[in-house]
Length: 270
Image 1 (cartoon, helix red, strand yellow):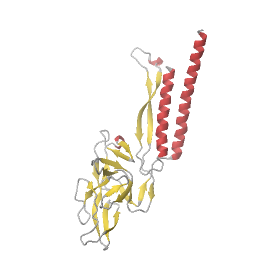
Image 2 (cartoon, one colour):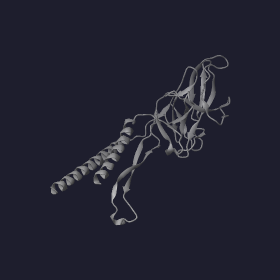
Image 3 (cartoon, one colour):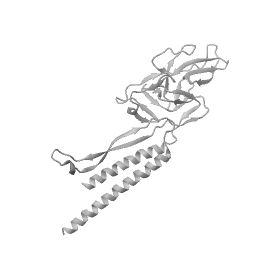
Image 4 (tube, one colour):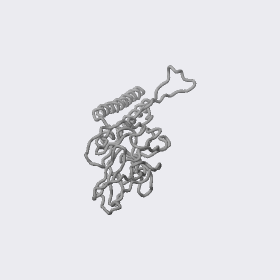
C-alpha cells in the first residue's frame, strides 16, 4: 500500500509542477491569470474501522484554481491598447461561428473594413450609441467603424476613452462616437473555462455573462494606451517550484525505502 500512497504523492507533485511551469512560461503573456493546484488527502475508512487506526492512502488533486487578481498595468502609448482597471472582461465573437469568448488582453486593432478585432482576429463587442455618445443598445454587437464620414473624408485614427467610447477621427478634422465597449462580468468568475490565447468561455459553473459600461458599478474602468501584464510573481513561483520538486523527491525516496524493506522481508523468507 505504501507504494501506491507515495505514487499518488508523486503524481500530485507532477501536477503541481505542471501548473507552476505553465505560470512561469506565461509570466510575460498579456492578460494571463495564474493558477494554483489544491490537494486533498485520501483516507481508507469503513464502519468497522477504529477511527484511531485509520490509515491514509495518499492524496488527490481537488482543484486547480485560477487567480483573477489584477496584474500590473503597463503603459504602451498605443491608442488601441486597452486595459481594464478593475473587474470584468473584454467580450469578443468568433467571426465565423459567432461564439463569444472573454479576455483581459486589450490589444485591439482595426482592419481595412473598419471591423475592430483583438489580436486573434475575433470581433470586439460593444453597445451602440447615438451621435452624442449616449448608449442606446442593451445587447452588445460587433464594432464596425465607418471608413469614411458623410462628407467623404477617410478615417485617420481611432481612440477609446475611459468610458469605453470608441471615437473615429477623419481627415477633415471631424470626429464622431461609434460605439461603447461592453465589459462582461460573471456571477462566479472562478468557473470560467480557459481555452488558450488568454481567453475564457462561460460555463455552467461561471454562469451567464452580464454586460455593462466601463466604470459603472462592478465593471472596471478602461485605460487607453496600456495593457495588463500577467499576474504571475516569478519569485513566488520559484519558491513553489522548489517545494514541488522536494515533494516529488521525498515521495520517490519513500518508494525506495518501501522497496528496500520489501526486499529485506523477501530475503528473510529464503
